[in-house]
Image 1 (cartoon, rainbow, N blue to C red):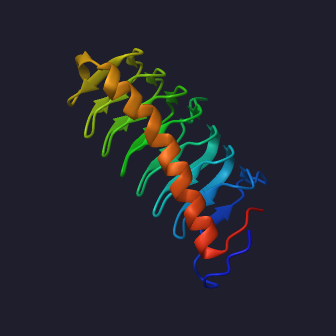
Image 2: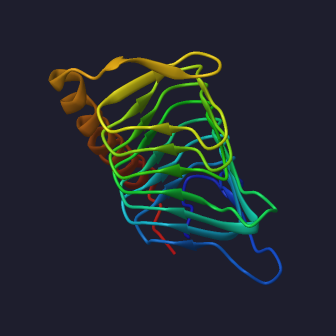
Length: 186
């Protein structure tokens, strides 16, 4: 990656046991973000300031147009469980994702935690601050909230449309940062 803004304004991208992250050319990774090991990030995605993605014991797979907002932490389990994130997923500020699955088109609100083997299906939402305990599943069209999280209600059609728009807005915002800072992908 070429960082024209300042020489010290860059993310930390490191190999682990000889495996270097694979990052699409147009991904925005903010200064101060850390990406380590067996991590793959798809086209149009963004990893914002202060995020940590660690694929050291298993893999982390992040799809296209995913936005991982500031302070998010993603890790895996030593029990052979990676973290998988589909396309067009929004992950709010300061989220913890650990050895879980976020399907295409899902949404996780600020400060939420998603634990081992839990799943947020496409078209589902986990509310800000929620704790999704191991092996729980948030089904399509459901909004879960609380600590521990449980079904709060069904998502209204206008809310579902808003979930879809957020991923696109963040993809556009990331492109603006790339253009303004003069950064190019690897």
